Amino acid sequence: MIAAVFAGCTKVDDTLGGNLIPDNQQMKAGYVELRGDRGEGLNPKKYVETRLFQSDSLISSNISYGYFGTILNDTLGERKAGFLSQMINYYKVDEGYFGYEPIFDSAQIILKITSIGRDSLTEQTFAIYEITSNEYITKKPVAANKSQADTTFYVNFDPTGPKDASGSQYAEPVYDASKKLFTFKLGGEGTTPSTATSITLEPTPEGRKYIRRLMLQEGDYDYSIYDPETLEQGGEAFKGRYICSDPDTPIQQDGNKETGTIFATSLDYSGLAVFGRNRVKDDPTLIKDTIGMVYYFYESGTEFGNVSVNTITRNYDKATSTAKIDIAKAREVNPDGSINEDRDLNSRVYVEGMGGVVTEMTFTPEFFARLEEEISATNEKEGKDFKTLAFSQAKMSVYFTESEYNWEGLVFSPELIAEMNAFPSRLGLYTNFKTLTPISDYAYSYEQNYNTTLSYGGYINRSRGCYVMDITGYMQQLWNSYIKAKEAAGGVIDDIDWTKVTNRTVYIGPEAYSLYSSSFGVLQGMTDPVNKAPIRFNLAYNLIK
Image (cartoon, rainbow, N blue to C red; front, top):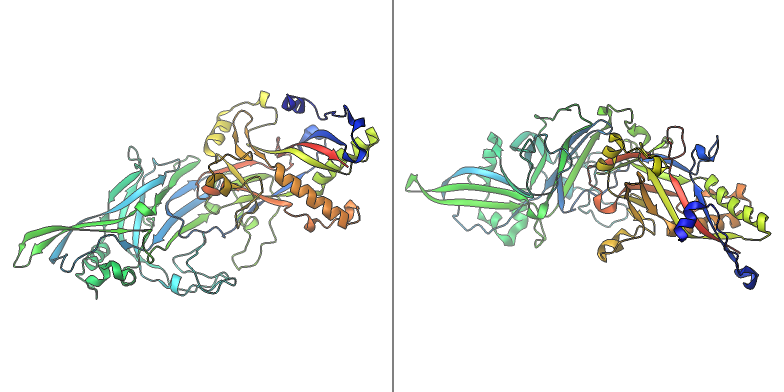
């Protein structure tokens, strides 16, 4: 019943019995909707400002999954993912196991696909390279806040020339791009990979040499590299593999909004399997036995060899849509390492995974002034002296580009349905996106650890054509910080130091456990003629003295 009253009115009168309550304990409930569209007049107020934001601070190493593939998108251009991983021999190989002049029969890549994306019908070719240098680990600069170098890497890691924070190359290339070992294909009509997939690899001449080294037929190695007690020695001999889209067989845009996909594999269950046979030494024409080795990308029980790094590259210039992104106005840090001071306002909300573009939203002074008006209007009308307010519920709605406020008149066009099907199923709201610090209402760790459901929501409301977030806790903290800054300014709003209003800026991004999702969305943002349904706030409150 209360919800029905709120939805139908802009004010709620709860003064019945108010004369029995001590004056300093009196409250009055109210409700206001802040929209910022033409429904507020010819010059609607701008309650928030939205800007694009892209940071390379997303951790891409040791996250249990390897991402690989290419997506061509009319809005985002080209996105490519690959991963490098150290390798761990799963079984002990006894002295003499490979025998005399072993024969290489085949090699397979073992995958446990956990994410396929939208377009698995486009066949993609992937290349496997040998990691030839561990300098990216051994020569990694020590971070300013740490006592020693670690194995934490970020989405901007470049295996062709690892760079430090200033953009200077600190290590030699991780792999030799001229020496491809194997290729394999994934995707295509009727070949959507199952959860567990083993794919036979196509070896190159370099790949066959590599196998001979694994079988100890070439190179300065012996069986000690296969001893579980000396894994580090094996890791020095064979440093791992890098898997990425084959540069010699790129996919082509097929006229659709999006072509290709990025796959994810669980590294715990992924690796390389090699099969062969060995010979009878006295008569090499006779086969003695079959042989096989399995090298996993990750093994939880080992203390060495579990470093993995995902690499993400983007080329926004390849976008063809009018909604294409000017990354120069979104990136946090310029290529030269300087802070980007040229991030202009952007009327749309962009939410992209894989360390791509998200949206920075800042509450304007007009937002707080509008709430001050609520307090003043009530005081003037009723002769009261309410000083502040406490939110009983605060909801934020972010609308699809083809949507509008009036859900009863909402036309579910093919474009709107396509948006709702393709966009992320949930949005996260953060006070610091680089550290994934959420607003108080979006306690995602608590939600997962205790298998509970937050009132925050953040999911698509299909009947209304928008995402809805309950941000009551955050809104109260924001308002309290504003009141504190106002008091520090002597109660003069024009003198407020807005940098003192804590967390006035928040970030709309993918939900915390879907940061590497390949889905993305473009939504309506701040007040602007291009937006018929700017970000809306529905605020229920109690005025207090």
